[in-house]
Length: 153
Image 1 (cartoon, helix red, strand yellow):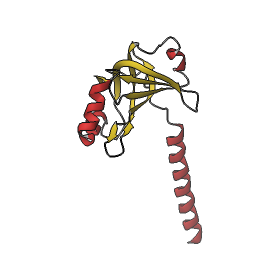
Image 2 (cartoon, rainbow, N blue to C red; image 1 turned 180 degrees about the vertical axis):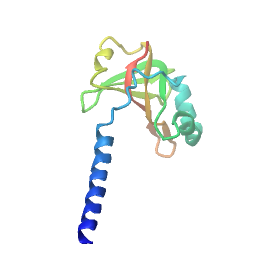
Image 3 (tube, rainbow, N blue to C red; image 1 turned 90 degrees about the vertical axis):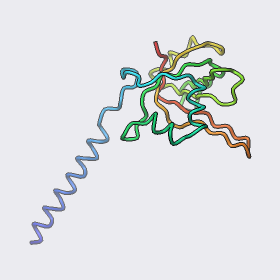
Image 4 (cartoon, rainbow, N blue to C red; image 1 turned 60 degrees about the horizontal axis):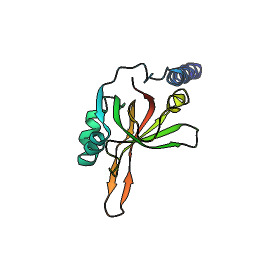
C-alpha cells in the first residue's frame, strides 16, 4: 500500500515538473511577425482608456487576457532609455496633449530607433501593457504603456 502511494506521488510530481517545464520553455509570441489586430492613433488609444478603461480592456485584450497586437501612430515627443537599456519613445497625436503612449522597444528592436528624432511622425507595432490614467485631484498623469515595440512598416 505504501509503495503504491509513493509511486502515485512520484507520478504527480513528475507530471507537475513536466507541465512547469512546458510552460517555461514554450516559445514566446513573436509580436513583430504577427499581423496587427488594430491600428489606432495615440490620442484615440489614450481617450478610450480615459473614457472607460473596462471597455478599452475588453476591446484590446483577447479572451485569455493577452493584449492584441496594435499599430499606434503619432508624433515622437520624447526619446529615452530605460534601466535595461531599452529605448522608450513617447508618442502623442498632438504634442500639446497631456497624455501619450510610452512605447518600449526590445533588445532586438532597439536599433530601429537610431534614426528616429523628436517630431517624427511614425507608426509603432506592439502590445499594450497598461492603459492611460489621469487623476485630477493629484494632477497625476500615467501614459499608456506599449511593450515589445518595433517600427511598423
